Image (cartoon, rainbow, N blue to C red):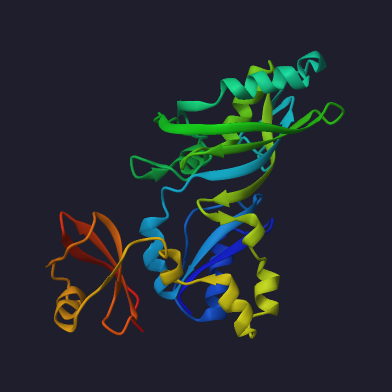
Length: 293
């Protein structure tokens, strides 16, 4: 089967672990669209078979997370996996709903963010966590990100934790956001829990666990319901039927003249069989990904 299946990743699995297990089940090429740390849970879109061609259309998706901050402690990785490197008193007077909501509101908008040193971003050909592990200093370039919304979900003064929902752009490091929130409350903090609830149009409510996939792998109706076909993924895009001559040219990679609007186009043959996706620019249609068996 070809397409996308949304996995609800559980703790202690890496994204690579999930890819490996799905690949073992389906016996075909498998990929993912964005790494989740082993301690994080939630939405992980997995591309199966010819669905791996869709990665180019999925890299800029906005995301939603639910995160919990542990206040009063800083770790070297900015999450629960790291080593404690600093502690600071938490002023409980600062931990009131109005104050926290004010801090969250002030963090909404376009901004620069410095990724954590323990991340897979490459600088001068090396991943940042490789510099961290070797003890070498490196200048980490800032990135442009946008936080669209932040909502307080829970405040536990006894445990000194804050749980919030964040809706943000691609490339946003929630660990860094957690640290910044703690600093704004005049203390330290690290990301204790993280659950991804949305990646673009993929939602947690539609996701399944690896156990559910294993249990229902022989159930074709289940798979048909859970695997988003390439055709369905682009169902809201314009559609064009090509005659045999134009289709042959299109499949051979020839740019053809076609009356179409700029952007992604669904391509069908004269018998209304889905062929794949093209990109139209100034009424010139070019092959992008082919879904024929």
